[in-house]
Amino acid sequence: MALSLSLAIFFTFKACMENYKNNLAEGSDKSVLVLGNSPDFMQIIQNSHFFNAGETSSFPIKLLREYEDFGEVIPVSNKFTAYEKPIVGLDRRYFRFKGLKVSEGEYFLKVGECVIGSECAKELNLSVGDSFVNDPSSSFDLSKSNPVKLKVCGILEKNSLPDDHTIFTNLKTTWVLEGIGHSHQPEEDDNVDSTITDLSSGPLEYLHFHGDENTYPLTGAILFPENDVTKAQLIAKSKNNKTSLTVVDPIEQIQQVFEKLAGIDSFFKLLFILMSISILLILGILIFQAASLRTKEKDTYFSLGIPKSFFYKSIFCEWILIIGLSISIASLITLIFKGLVLEIFSAIT
Amino acid sequence: MIKIENLSFSYPDNTFSISIDNLTIGKGESIAIKGPSGSGKSTFLKLISGQAKSHKGKISIENTNLSDLSEESLRKLRLENFGIISQSPNLIEWLSVKDNIYLPLSFLNSKENLSDRYENLLNKFSLKELENKTAKNLSFGEQFRVSIIRALLAKPNYILADEPTASFDAKLRDKAIEILLEESKNIGATLILVSHEEEVLKSFSSILSSESCEVKV
Image 1 (tube, rainbow over the protein chains, first blue to last red):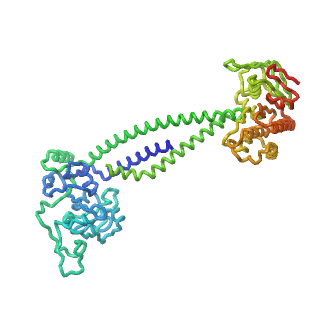
Image 2 (cartoon, chains in turn yellow, purple):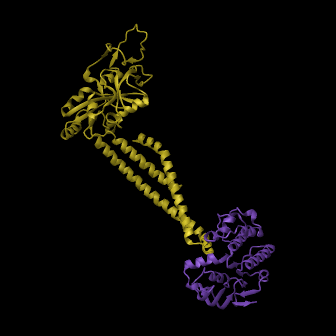
Image 3 (tube, rainbow over the protein chains, first blue to last red):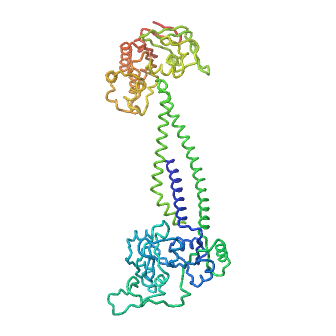
């Protein structure tokens, strides 16, 4: 059992580390930078690279103008979810730059239309033409805008990237979700549910936006610099910037995380080595004691003329069985607990 | 036949030694060895069964000098020719009575069916009901009876018994000696028995004293 448990700890941690590294490395394009309004690099990467809609600070769209000289800038708004899947507002250039294609339908054109990732479509059982409503931000805050009914116009091909689990729409749709844009439905229409803003069907002549367009909020941006020089310039610019916007190279940050993980990995390797030494010492004592206890058995075989090899073979087989069982139990424990440890890992990191 | 010439043996720490000038034990003979504790009786049995070496002089089993044999050859000789009953039962704890009895046989290439002999010996020693019990669950006396049957089953040429009745009551002792003498006669085996019990020695016509190394008839 002692051997099984120590092996299980090592196997489980190793499996989790590999899984975590693979998850982090998914979709990492060397040429892409991300931008956000946060000093926390990982938060920016989570929001604009992995599209995890968490707590994030907004900034006005006009602040992106100064980055347009360095390459393509794709503004991103990632604040809302539908069935816990992120609804990311950006423009269609994103699909071209990432090489993402639709397997069904087409890219969004109008407000209210969405292109969804392949896993999203599968999990939510949505097809082209279906409609859905975003998750309410709060049931108790009446100042928040109504939920919005959106329509699926396309489904992306599977690409094993975070995009598979994302709902994409245009920026104007996300601003409607935020309440900056809305529609005034005719009062005499009894079929209209006034608690939901329906962008999925019909003409949108009543849809309009309030305020200065330059102040409309974004949560981040994806930057495609022209070359390595402009890439370096963008990063330097953000360090010298008087605004709070930060440009992050996701690859570099992920590599730093890997190095940190490697440090943790080394720590656990050392821990495993120390544990193994102590377990081997205990095992050694147990084997020695067991051998001493079996001296009488060995003497019996000798006095009867039974070959010594029979005695050693039986001991060898016993220990092979013990070690084999230990590894099997360790593998079983790893399989059972890997999922749980991964969850804890994700929560921590 | 066992022939001993000018045998001299001592342990490495020189705490003990035995010496025998000349001794011949014929095939099928039954001989008892008596003597006080520590006088070399058990060592003598180990020497003639090849369990102890490094002696001076000559021990021959069927004209084969034991000193000329390797460890492996001595082991084979012991397995194929000797049935040994030690001072303690020396059973394998986790094996059943039946498995313990058949243990040496499983290493011999004997094609003879000994199941009738096995049943017969088991019944003689009243162990039939305990056949499937593991050795560790037997009393000391029961274990001893099992070790006697184990020594007799394969019809060895030589039966060496070291205080086999030490833990028996009088009735069982007499029965055990009777069976040993009867079986050794039936199979033509040479029986060499060590004992300090006068009641046991009475059953033997040839008695060797370990003190004087003389055979008293």
